[in-house]
Length: 191
Image (cartoon, rainbow, N blue to C red):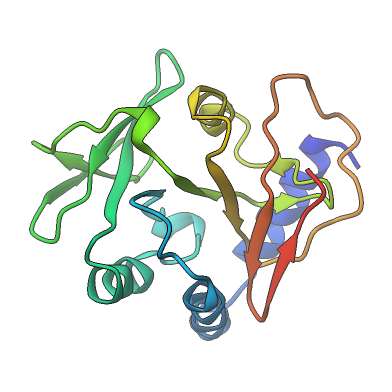
């Protein structure tokens, strides 16, 4: 399938999930994230979920990292909708957040973090194929961001759904991920 068809299909599938289903899926996803050994990571970039889009709730994972890996600096982004670039900031326990026009919580008055420092990125996505090619919301924010990261940055994704066999219309600027965390299973991808 092509990206637009996959995007529409998986947005509809995610939107059809009930609150009870989301709670269970989030718990199962959190278990998968907790099984990973994060000890080699010093700067971990992750997204703050958009509640109205029924994205995986990253807050229990964030709190777990702060407790289990206090040496890890958590990083999140602010979106520049004119340039479609992400700017990266330290996520602090007592930091202030303000939701942007899309409903994405973003840090305010936070310390900026250079992209070169980031060791691992947890990307939001709707679906991914077995080669690690992602389908998100179609604006390319994360492709631009990942292209600017160090070549050895760990590129991970989080989804409620298992990988599809193939995304037919992958472009040269698409950046694949190498691992996908899903409820009940972590997939190691070919990309």
